[in-house]
Length: 157
View 1 (tube, rainbow, N blue to C red):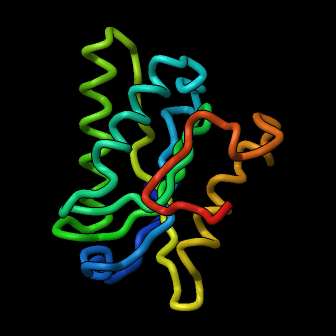
View 2: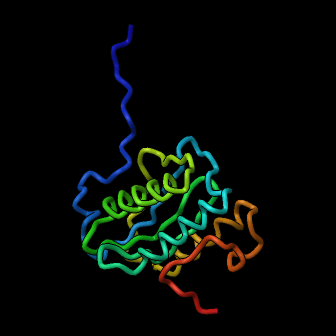
C-alpha cells in the first residue's frame, strides 16, 4: 500500500508578506464550491455586488474592478490596512453570512487563485480583462451591458 499522502498544490507565493504590502495589486479569482453556478440566482449576485460596492473604497483594501460570473468572481484588489489574503477572507466571510441570512445554501471553494500584478501591468488592462469575461463565456455581447461588474476604476468611454 502506498503511504504517500495527498498534498494540496501550493498556490500562494512562498513569501506571504508580499500579500500584505500596502498598495500591492492582485487579480484574484474566488470560485464557488464544486463550481456550482450559485450566481445565476439574481438575488445572490445582486447581494454580492452590493457587498463589493460597499467595500470597494475602504481603508482596509480597495476593489479596482470586479466581475461576478455564475460560478466564480474576479477581483482586482489593492492591499491597504488589510492584505490581499485578509481581504479575500473578509469578502468570503461576509458574503457567506449574507447568503445564510437570505436562507440560501451557499459555499465558497476552500481557497482562491491570485496573480500579483507586475510593474508593467496596469489597472486599466487588468480591469478590462476582468470585465471582458462575460463576453468570453457568451453571457453578454458587450461588457458594458453585463449587470454584475464594477469597481473603482472608471474607463474612459
